[in-house]
Each structure stands twice: as C-alpha cells, then as structure tokens.
Length: 294
Image 1 (spheres, rainbow, N blue to C red):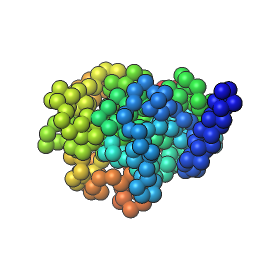
Image 2 (image 1 turned 135 degrees about the vertical axis):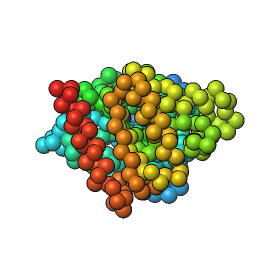
Image 3 (image 1 turned 90 degrees about the vertical axis):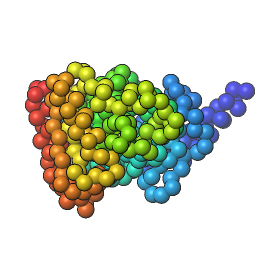
Image 4 (image 1 turned 30 degrees about the vertical axis):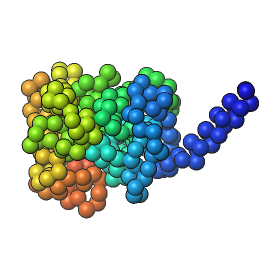
C-alpha cells in the first residue's frame, strides 16, 4: 500500500510539472486547489486555455513570482490579479507582462492565477488573501522573495478582487492599485457578467449590496490608486469614481487618473496612448508611499 501511495504521489508531481506554465517567472508557488483550500468553487473539469494566455475553469490557485531588479529594489512587492470577468484570466497584458514591468522598476511582482468563483465569491477572495500572506512571509512558500510592504493590483474583475481584499479581506494589503475596476453590482452601473459569475444570475439584492464594494470601505482600507478611461463602455467609470468618493469619505489616501480615451482592457498594451502616463503615475505614487513609510 505504501508503494502505491508513493507512486501516486510521484505521478501527481509529474503531472503538475507537465502542466506548469512558464511565463518567465523565477518561482511558482502552488497555493492550493479545491480539495485543499478552505472552500471549493465546484469546478471539477480540467482547466482550459481557449486561446493563448487566457485560462478558464481555474480550480488551482498559483502564484508566479517575478523578483525586483536588485539594482532598483524599493522593498515593495505586489500581488497582481488579472481580469477576465470572473470567467477567465487574461494572463499576459494584465498579468505577467505587467509583473515584468514592475520587477524592472524595483517592485517584486507575483501574478495570481486565482480560482474562478463559479457562484462562490469567497473562493477568489481566499486565494488573494493567501497570496498576500505568502508574499509577506506570514505563511511559507515564497522564501527569498518576500517583502514587508505588500500591495495588490487588479484589472477589471481582478480590480474587484483586489478591492475585495482591500475592504473585506482578512489580511489587508499595504496599498491597492485598481485599473478600470469592477466595483458595484447596482443595476445600470455594473458589469453584469462579472457579477453573474461571482454571485450567480439569481443573486439576491442583499448579495449584490454586500459585493458592491463602495459600500464596504472602512478606515482600515489601504491607500488606493485608480486608473481608468472616460470612454469605458464595458465597465462604467462610475464604478471607480464611486469607490474613490467612498475612500475620501473615510479619510483614505487615494488618487485617481481618468484618461480621456482608451476604452476598457488596455492593461500594459503598447497601443494604449496613455501607457507611459499611467506607468509614471504608478511609480510616482508608489515612490511617495515608500517615502512616507521610511
């Protein structure tokens, strides 16, 4: 029996190695799957990649770590949550490409492949919280890459996840950077697909209000930077502006940059006219936070 168990474990490791994704990361941390995590999303089918760098049906949480350039290291680190409407993950221009940019500018970055909620909103949140704990060294897994000041960034639905971690998570990030974030489930203002996937199409009004995160800001919410386009027709800009208003009402250090055009989902794409502008804004903001914490 012992030999069969060892053989099964070895086969499991071989399967994991065979399916590991290589984005150029220095390390991959396997956080947990539906069997070992506190909660399951109920997805039992294999993860799929419907097109290059788009991962769907995720049921295993992983963290892909890109360490800071030692010559420019600031002592900061960031967990990155790609978008995809809580249906899939855009792993390139909202994931590893962004992580490489942060790392080149002295900020250790870790891209989170979080599990899709599939109507279980607690699932991606516990993945994000555990990623923050790992990167801060509170729990093992990222030895040699941890930092004392660990923030979170998110794009679109990933921005909603980052804002969840910042408002109702059990381990708050040191700061959050939200790119064209999904925030509210209010009719006429929401990105309906994200909330259908997060809470289910038959969600109650109470559930919608609970995950409309402009309602969940407290004095413990971390400093926040928001970046978006005025002509976003996918996630209405009011999502970000309402969150900003709530942050200021609670005395939170917050800044917001609204670019006149660009629509939705530009991430770090080179064809976004204001790419250099948002990059400089992020570096300036993080530099100011770092100086304040000295």
